[in-house]
Length: 584
Image (cartoon, rainbow, N blue to C red; front, side, top):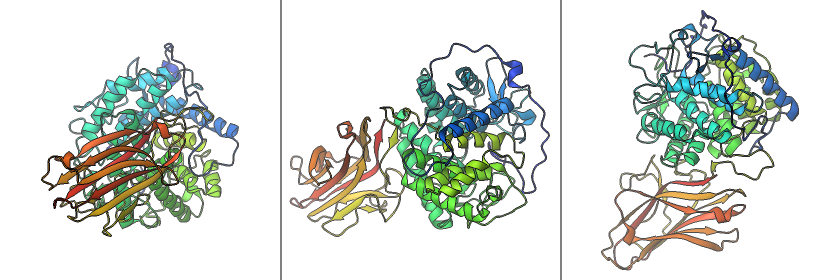
């Protein structure tokens, strides 16, 4: 099968014939009138966890500017049309005649908005990048993943299709642009609707491509920070379901195959089950895809970034394991983080090396709180020891932005501002961590475990685990609670999916109830957000929301209390799934 917007190197390396494209300056057009940047570079971000490089902030900003200038001069091309720009794959051979791939176009659409303010032409360039995407869509309305650099037409075999990594980054770029300059809302939401319709499997996991099967996934597409931004921005689609299932796949896979190292193979099959596993060799590409390869070397970067921005426990835990694993493999030398690594943290091959393998570890090391390793990786970014091209240099530019503290999340404001970074705050929101529900706490007067995977009797809304309160046919009180800090200056909303199933025969009495409450640190009930009863029984799940903005700046406990009296002889089950506490 052909590769999809990803690395095609064999272990011995690939000899690339690079045809030069016209440089950006040769085709530069006069910039259109640009909107004022809301987050001009450098917009400094205070991350929620981890450490920063020891270098001063001013030197970090200067390093980003130097790298951006180099990346732009070498890879940002004005073409294929006078109103289009694309990211050249020069030096890597990912497309004929150094043409664009959707992965690279997405990188560009993330980099350029973040550099607005430093680059006076950033909005013109972004509009050109987006124009090329619009002019080269497949049958699903997503970017054709690979274009020839001369003809600017799709050249890969078969019907044109899209790749999920590029689709996600393009969508994130549009959200960034809308927060940076405004005016992209309709385009961003239409794009995200297409991504949700074609790149998301029915159970919520991310497919590898829009026309691919519903059974596999590519962990390098697991950009949790993107999914959280989408959930806050595009409320018409259940991105929290995608986030929950993606985190579940990460946890299920690493628990079974890399419990110490937290590594994920390039491709994963069985992603629609509770037992995802490594794909066999040569599953999608001409390389051993059952190990970490040129795709999954990006995972530490993505998970580390999410942990830094949002403090996500899943991302931070796995990123910290990956950082330690790759530090051990390399002996602390970033050059010896090998792009082909076994899931047990040993090198599959030492004959192939690439700068991006080491660069991508930086955000994970920061999230892990490893100061010495973070400093080593920061210093390594200034080098390119193996002469890597578009792929390594594009990843390096984005990693530089993260490590410098210049990577802001959509909806955020500069350090010292009064705004709010959009985020989903609940840990284990879909209960997919399994029998240990932390950070949820649960109680039952019948000594039951409300969080369980008995989906044969009560199916989940997504994934395989739910919180099933009551339904035992006996008097019982079950509780589920989580304590969370809501940042000051945020609007906040609770969301949850509830299925109520009852055998009570009454049409008026309410012997069985579920209360949704907010408590303070002393356990005092501050508010009852909703009360449900046996009379609210339904087929399937219904989504419910509650406004928590009044509690911004406070640490509160969200508590679900199910009470069954057994007074009428029937029983009622209150089944919860896919919770969220979104702030923006």
